[in-house]
Length: 309
Image (tube, rainbow, N blue to C red; front, top):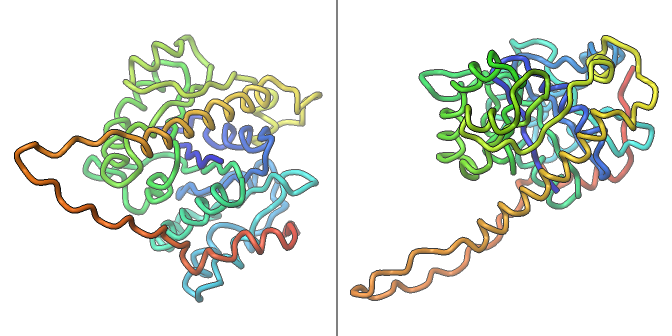
């Protein structure tokens, strides 16, 4: 399945888009609310039904406690988005001051996301929030960069307005550099367009020099419900927003599969004829999951936990 990270230059509906994608998935899905500036789902969609005792910050504490603690905590801090438990969310931080504590946890959490996608068959959507820069690069504390490094796709969420494009334009080069140097490659980067404004997809692509990999309609009633500021509209599951999000996930899955095939079978430059070919190095053994994530799938399979109180 696919690990997709959503980011923005300014508030452009990242969390609402992430929720729509998670709720519309036809497979088991997980939304990880990893915005260092703090989460909004707890106070929004869940109307403060989830206490501060549940959520992302506790994974930082668990990761320091031993090999199995992160897997134990991860499974127990998920909250159901539906009755079946097939769609779940990891609520975000309650205080931005907690963000520095997660600096050493992001890499292990990225491995958890990879395990859930590759071995568990989950669609994983990461709400990485608003990007912050420091000296032209992603800020080491205010952006969960390791989660972007490990994602199949990183989507810059923009609205179809000149203002949104002007802000996003300054983020494209730092993101390209980050994914080239530390991630899976600059071709993982694309745009998720919120069709709230006059600009069309080809104009957005030309302005940002990035492909528009998916688009979602602007549907105020459904968006207000997902943000916790309105009631659930009639026919929510058939709404234009969720229907488009389901289609978008299909496109993103296909794009991620094409990238994986290209990386696997990418041609290599032949050695110069005048030089003897070097001896072939033995193929590296597959990297085993870190001990702290080895039990994630087993623990999730033991029963979905709904910690709302």
